[in-house]
Length: 174
Image (cartoon, rainbow, N blue to C red):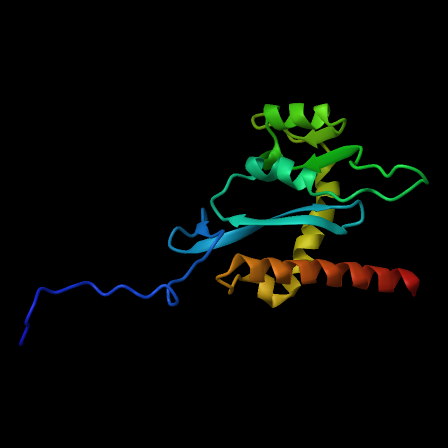
């Protein structure tokens, strides 16, 4: 072997490396990086705001950002309501600070606290959100994140939200 210099480890150029913005180590499979979608739905499963974060980000950190992303609620004539009356969520989105902040914003938090028993009947209401996630993942592009750029992935998420709303409007007209 003819070696003229010290051996150097090969590093992949930036265009070949996996990952991108909003990716992090998965708590399930420690070898791979991944992303997580956080979504708030209306009462019938209409997706409102969606946030994409790294897989290792705590859900509590995204709770208030999701609530702030809710568009004005249409209804009676006059000034539109900015917030819903109640917010439902699983234990991952609840903490004392989040409960306090939601009450300050005049919203009833229906979120179990860690260490306390689950709220009875919340699973039936939680099914609406799980159904929306299932609709997202029917679009294969969102089931596994292939885009390195977060802007592209968020554009596909917005397109998925638009398709879900369009299908529900189409079904309501029939």
